[in-house]
Amino acid sequence: MTSELVHRLRSDLDSARFTVTTLTGLWGDEADAALHRNERVPALRALARRRAETGVEASATLARLFILGLGVDRDDAAAALPTLGVAGATELGLVTADGAEVRPLLDLRPYSFVDAAGAGSWWIVSDLGELALGRPLGEEHVLGVGGASMTLSGLMMQTPVGSVLDLGTGCGIQAMHAARHSVSVVATDISERALALARINAELNGINNIEFRHGDLFEPVRGERFDQIVSNPPFVITPRSDGVPSYEYRDGGMEGDALVEAVIRGAAAHLHPGGVAQLLGNWEYRVGQDAFRRVGGWVDGTGLDAWVIERDVQDPAQYAETWIRDGGTRSGTPEFERLYTAWLDDFAARRVTSVGFGYITLRMPLDGSPTLRRLERLHGALGSNETGLGVHLAAALAGHDWQAVRSDEELGLAQLIAAPDVTEERHYWPGAEHPTALMLRQGGGFGRTVRMDTGLSALVGASDGDLSVAAVVAAIAQLLDADYLELREELLPRVRALVSDGFLLPPE
Ligand SMILES: C[S@@+](CC[C@H](N)C(=O)[O-])C[C@H]1O[C@@H](n2cnc3c(N)ncnc32)[C@H](O)[C@@H]1O
Image (cartoon, rainbow, N blue to C red; front, side):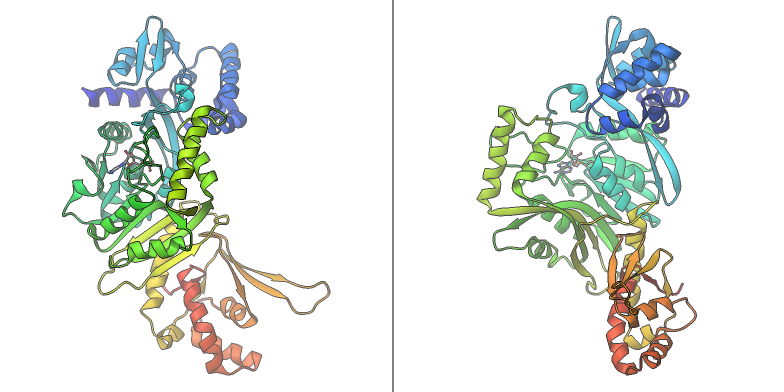
């Protein structure tokens, strides 16, 4: 019966054109931005104006109910859900009807995206947020698509694979994305409620290659291996003291950053050779201990390639404020200050000085030992990645693999091509004939900037796929009146780095 109801819901949402574009059309960009800040007054005013002008619209009713979290007239609800009806919506757990009013029990909103396969649009059911509830979230809250969800789905490599594991699936968003480039997905969660909503989401959007399993971390997939693992795990560092809420959606129940370590170590036993795990995480910096030494230690002994990118770092106070607010507790209240104290006590107990956030990519080598161990801090703006950063990550890994197995002689024979998003910047002192700085900039990917000298600049400029690296180096040596072997020794390690970072592309 649930299946039938979900199909009717899909048909009603379709008829109402309940899309991201419709919503922006209903209330405009300013109200949209206010909603991102958890404020609904501008959207409500826009809906009221529109109703006065055009009368009742199904999309506006659905938006008021499921996004703004407010009651609507029973007749309006019935008109907006003509095939499902108020009774069907009640049976699905979406609403509760009380006399002439229908109130929401779940959040339901459109979600649109672009990936390597093209543009797509889904509807996502999750628990009502703090805005609709008007109070802090419950500990069993099932998260909708948030900032971290979109970070991970953007990062997800989209190379076609057989099997994917989404660990901690929540509303199912990562599993649904993974289902687009894989034969089958296993999505797990410790929350039965999350799994129930994720099943509805998959069905609502016509996705049928996801299997949902209940259990703690890797327990539901014991003995199984996958081509790809993705996880936005409950990595938030939360004090383990009485009276501090432990939200299932973000708090893995371990001390400090131990949950991230557990996911990293667990991944090793669940990847096929060549398989990749991608996760988000937090890591603690402690007095006298750089966080990267600890993260590197978590990877030690797993036999995995590892590429860790720190995107941000917060001091304990900023971190505590971020996550107490995220749970819906308002600052300036006694409760906020009580929780703030608990957070700072917890950090002080482990002598934490700051907390890093970032992306972790792990890979089981196809054979032999790991060849990649890269931990870097990239706190600035990313490049532009229309179809997701994951496309760049996969290309960068392929670039690394290509150069790592080649000797200097073999690299010298290759005909490399400068990537199309690469530009060069030259800075001059006013009136100077020669530049004081040469920079290579990447338009996509991580938007990296590399400082160059004339030799490297000439090499990248001449990399059009016709001449071998060795031939280009020989020509540059002649031009600069430099020793060929010395120049080659200087340039080849830089060429390797540029290939690994996607500035220079290996031949097809
Ligand atoms: C941050 S949410 C991520 C949800 C979703 N994958 C996304 O990207 O938006 C983390 C999820 O992990 C689940 N979770 C928490 N502890 C877990 C555990 N020990 N084992 C498996 N899943 C867990 C939570 O219920 C929650 O759904």
